[in-house]
Length: 237
View (cartoon, rainbow, N blue to C red):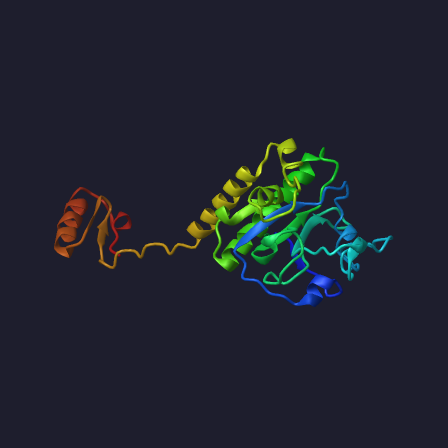
Protein backbone atom coordinates (compact mmCIF):
# COMPACT_ATOMS: atom_id res chain seq x y z
CA UNK A 1 0.00 0.00 0.00
CA UNK A 2 1.22 3.47 -0.93
CA UNK A 3 -0.22 5.37 2.04
CA UNK A 4 0.30 9.13 2.35
CA UNK A 5 -1.30 11.82 4.48
CA UNK A 6 -2.84 15.20 3.72
CA UNK A 7 -5.39 16.05 6.41
CA UNK A 8 -8.27 18.29 5.33
CA UNK A 9 -7.81 20.86 8.06
CA UNK A 10 -9.83 23.46 6.11
CA UNK A 11 -12.90 21.23 5.81
CA UNK A 12 -15.80 22.02 8.15
CA UNK A 13 -15.94 18.35 9.10
CA UNK A 14 -12.40 18.45 10.46
CA UNK A 15 -13.13 21.74 12.23
CA UNK A 16 -16.15 20.15 13.96
CA UNK A 17 -13.66 18.03 15.90
CA UNK A 18 -15.96 15.11 16.73
CA UNK A 19 -14.48 11.68 17.42
CA UNK A 20 -15.72 8.11 16.99
CA UNK A 21 -14.66 4.65 18.03
CA UNK A 22 -14.40 2.90 14.65
CA UNK A 23 -16.59 -0.21 14.47
CA UNK A 24 -16.55 -0.71 10.72
CA UNK A 25 -15.33 0.46 7.32
CA UNK A 26 -17.48 1.81 4.47
CA UNK A 27 -16.22 1.57 0.88
CA UNK A 28 -17.27 4.36 -1.48
CA UNK A 29 -16.49 5.18 -5.10
CA UNK A 30 -16.75 8.67 -6.48
CA UNK A 31 -19.32 8.18 -9.26
CA UNK A 32 -17.40 10.45 -11.66
CA UNK A 33 -15.02 9.73 -14.51
CA UNK A 34 -11.89 11.20 -12.95
CA UNK A 35 -9.28 8.84 -11.50
CA UNK A 36 -6.92 11.65 -10.44
CA UNK A 37 -6.43 12.24 -6.74
CA UNK A 38 -5.84 15.96 -7.34
CA UNK A 39 -9.54 16.37 -8.13
CA UNK A 40 -10.35 15.65 -4.47
CA UNK A 41 -7.10 15.99 -2.51
CA UNK A 42 -5.22 19.26 -2.27
CA UNK A 43 -3.35 21.47 -2.35
CA UNK A 44 -0.63 19.95 -4.51
CA UNK A 45 2.14 18.37 -2.42
CA UNK A 46 4.38 17.83 -5.44
CA UNK A 47 3.03 14.34 -6.10
CA UNK A 48 -0.64 15.06 -6.69
CA UNK A 49 -0.34 17.63 -9.44
CA UNK A 50 -2.14 20.96 -9.66
CA UNK A 51 -5.94 21.14 -9.62
CA UNK A 52 -6.60 23.96 -12.07
CA UNK A 53 -10.15 24.46 -10.77
CA UNK A 54 -9.11 24.42 -7.09
CA UNK A 55 -12.23 22.36 -6.31
CA UNK A 56 -10.57 19.79 -4.07
CA UNK A 57 -12.19 18.89 -0.73
CA UNK A 58 -9.70 20.58 1.57
CA UNK A 59 -11.97 23.60 1.98
CA UNK A 60 -14.85 24.49 4.25
CA UNK A 61 -17.71 23.10 2.14
CA UNK A 62 -16.43 21.64 -1.14
CA UNK A 63 -18.89 22.32 -3.95
CA UNK A 64 -21.13 23.84 -1.28
CA UNK A 65 -21.66 20.47 0.40
CA UNK A 66 -20.93 19.09 3.85
CA UNK A 67 -18.79 16.15 2.77
CA UNK A 68 -15.55 14.61 3.98
CA UNK A 69 -14.10 11.09 3.99
CA UNK A 70 -11.12 9.60 5.78
CA UNK A 71 -9.17 8.71 2.64
CA UNK A 72 -9.07 8.71 -1.16
CA UNK A 73 -7.50 6.14 -3.48
CA UNK A 74 -6.55 7.10 -7.04
CA UNK A 75 -3.80 8.30 -9.37
CA UNK A 76 -0.90 10.60 -8.67
CA UNK A 77 0.32 12.92 -11.43
CA UNK A 78 2.86 10.27 -12.56
CA UNK A 79 0.06 7.75 -13.06
CA UNK A 80 0.91 5.55 -10.09
CA UNK A 81 -1.76 4.66 -7.51
CA UNK A 82 -1.74 5.88 -3.93
CA UNK A 83 -3.93 6.26 -0.84
CA UNK A 84 -4.21 9.65 0.85
CA UNK A 85 -5.47 9.80 4.42
CA UNK A 86 -7.54 12.98 4.68
CA UNK A 87 -8.98 12.74 8.22
CA UNK A 88 -7.67 11.12 11.40
CA UNK A 89 -9.09 7.59 11.42
CA UNK A 90 -11.02 8.21 14.63
CA UNK A 91 -12.54 11.50 13.42
CA UNK A 92 -16.26 11.53 12.67
CA UNK A 93 -16.55 11.83 8.88
CA UNK A 94 -19.33 13.13 6.64
CA UNK A 95 -19.50 10.31 4.12
CA UNK A 96 -22.46 8.03 4.79
CA UNK A 97 -25.43 10.37 4.95
CA UNK A 98 -26.66 8.43 7.97
CA UNK A 99 -25.77 6.85 11.30
CA UNK A 100 -22.71 5.09 9.82
CA UNK A 101 -20.91 8.41 10.23
CA UNK A 102 -20.90 7.64 13.95
CA UNK A 103 -19.33 4.21 13.58
CA UNK A 104 -17.55 3.75 10.25
CA UNK A 105 -14.34 4.91 8.63
CA UNK A 106 -15.19 5.85 5.05
CA UNK A 107 -12.94 6.09 2.01
CA UNK A 108 -13.48 6.88 -1.67
CA UNK A 109 -11.97 5.10 -4.66
CA UNK A 110 -11.66 7.47 -7.63
CA UNK A 111 -13.64 6.04 -10.54
CA UNK A 112 -12.63 6.23 -14.19
CA UNK A 113 -14.77 5.35 -17.20
CA UNK A 114 -15.02 1.73 -15.95
CA UNK A 115 -13.11 0.26 -18.91
CA UNK A 116 -9.51 0.23 -17.64
CA UNK A 117 -8.99 -3.15 -15.97
CA UNK A 118 -5.37 -2.33 -15.11
CA UNK A 119 -6.38 0.77 -13.15
CA UNK A 120 -9.25 -1.03 -11.47
CA UNK A 121 -7.07 -3.91 -10.32
CA UNK A 122 -4.53 -1.51 -8.84
CA UNK A 123 -7.03 0.56 -6.86
CA UNK A 124 -8.94 -2.56 -5.81
CA UNK A 125 -5.73 -4.06 -4.40
CA UNK A 126 -4.90 -0.75 -2.70
CA UNK A 127 -8.36 -0.69 -1.11
CA UNK A 128 -7.96 -4.25 0.15
CA UNK A 129 -4.62 -3.37 1.72
CA UNK A 130 -6.06 -0.20 3.30
CA UNK A 131 -8.84 -2.26 4.88
CA UNK A 132 -6.34 -4.80 6.18
CA UNK A 133 -4.36 -1.94 7.73
CA UNK A 134 -7.49 -0.51 9.39
CA UNK A 135 -8.70 -3.92 10.57
CA UNK A 136 -5.40 -4.44 12.36
CA UNK A 137 -5.50 -0.94 13.87
CA UNK A 138 -9.02 -1.30 15.28
CA UNK A 139 -9.38 -5.06 15.79
CA UNK A 140 -11.91 -5.41 12.97
CA UNK A 141 -12.53 -8.24 10.50
CA UNK A 142 -13.77 -8.46 6.94
CA UNK A 143 -17.28 -8.83 8.37
CA UNK A 144 -17.11 -5.21 9.51
CA UNK A 145 -16.66 -3.89 5.95
CA UNK A 146 -19.62 -2.71 3.85
CA UNK A 147 -20.20 -0.77 0.65
CA UNK A 148 -22.20 2.44 0.66
CA UNK A 149 -25.17 0.66 -0.96
CA UNK A 150 -25.07 -1.98 1.79
CA UNK A 151 -25.15 0.78 4.36
CA UNK A 152 -28.36 2.01 2.77
CA UNK A 153 -29.80 -1.51 2.91
CA UNK A 154 -29.02 -1.56 6.63
CA UNK A 155 -30.66 1.83 7.14
CA UNK A 156 -27.46 3.60 8.19
CA UNK A 157 -26.52 5.40 4.95
CA UNK A 158 -28.07 7.40 2.13
CA UNK A 159 -29.36 5.80 -1.07
CA UNK A 160 -26.23 5.39 -3.20
CA UNK A 161 -25.20 2.47 -5.40
CA UNK A 162 -21.43 2.64 -4.95
CA UNK A 163 -19.32 0.65 -5.37
CA UNK A 164 -21.75 -1.87 -6.91
CA UNK A 165 -22.04 0.38 -9.96
CA UNK A 166 -18.38 -0.33 -10.77
CA UNK A 167 -17.04 -3.53 -9.17
CA UNK A 168 -19.11 -6.06 -11.18
CA UNK A 169 -17.81 -4.63 -14.46
CA UNK A 170 -14.46 -6.14 -13.51
CA UNK A 171 -15.76 -9.35 -11.97
CA UNK A 172 -15.70 -8.13 -8.38
CA UNK A 173 -18.25 -7.43 -5.65
CA UNK A 174 -18.29 -6.52 -1.99
CA UNK A 175 -18.38 -10.25 -1.25
CA UNK A 176 -15.16 -10.87 -3.20
CA UNK A 177 -13.69 -7.75 -1.61
CA UNK A 178 -14.38 -9.04 1.91
CA UNK A 179 -12.99 -12.44 0.94
CA UNK A 180 -9.79 -10.82 -0.34
CA UNK A 181 -9.42 -8.81 2.86
CA UNK A 182 -9.90 -11.97 4.91
CA UNK A 183 -7.33 -13.88 2.86
CA UNK A 184 -4.80 -11.06 3.17
CA UNK A 185 -5.37 -10.77 6.92
CA UNK A 186 -4.87 -14.52 7.37
CA UNK A 187 -1.73 -14.48 5.24
CA UNK A 188 -0.19 -11.62 7.23
CA UNK A 189 -1.09 -13.28 10.54
CA UNK A 190 0.41 -16.62 9.46
CA UNK A 191 3.66 -14.95 8.43
CA UNK A 192 4.11 -13.64 11.98
CA UNK A 193 3.81 -17.01 13.69
CA UNK A 194 6.97 -17.95 15.60
CA UNK A 195 8.68 -21.05 14.15
CA UNK A 196 8.86 -24.04 16.47
CA UNK A 197 12.11 -24.25 18.39
CA UNK A 198 14.43 -27.06 17.28
CA UNK A 199 14.98 -29.97 19.63
CA UNK A 200 17.61 -29.31 22.27
CA UNK A 201 18.70 -32.98 22.29
CA UNK A 202 22.29 -33.35 21.12
CA UNK A 203 22.61 -35.85 18.27
CA UNK A 204 25.72 -37.74 17.22
CA UNK A 205 25.54 -38.25 13.48
CA UNK A 206 27.25 -40.67 11.13
CA UNK A 207 26.65 -41.14 7.46
CA UNK A 208 23.76 -43.57 7.78
CA UNK A 209 21.98 -42.43 10.91
CA UNK A 210 21.56 -40.20 13.92
CA UNK A 211 21.59 -41.37 17.53
CA UNK A 212 20.56 -39.82 20.82
CA UNK A 213 22.95 -42.17 22.64
CA UNK A 214 26.62 -41.62 21.80
CA UNK A 215 27.61 -45.26 22.40
CA UNK A 216 25.20 -46.38 19.67
CA UNK A 217 26.73 -43.81 17.32
CA UNK A 218 30.19 -45.13 18.18
CA UNK A 219 29.12 -48.68 17.27
CA UNK A 220 27.79 -47.50 13.90
CA UNK A 221 30.96 -45.50 13.36
CA UNK A 222 33.07 -48.58 13.94
CA UNK A 223 30.98 -50.53 11.42
CA UNK A 224 31.33 -47.71 8.88
CA UNK A 225 35.11 -47.61 9.24
CA UNK A 226 35.30 -51.37 8.95
CA UNK A 227 33.32 -51.13 5.73
CA UNK A 228 35.94 -48.78 4.36
CA UNK A 229 34.43 -45.29 4.86
CA UNK A 230 36.94 -42.59 5.67
CA UNK A 231 36.57 -39.83 8.24
CA UNK A 232 35.55 -37.44 5.47
CA UNK A 233 32.18 -39.21 5.31
CA UNK A 234 31.76 -39.44 9.07
CA UNK A 235 30.82 -36.51 11.32
CA UNK A 236 29.78 -35.87 14.89
CA UNK A 237 27.82 -32.66 15.65
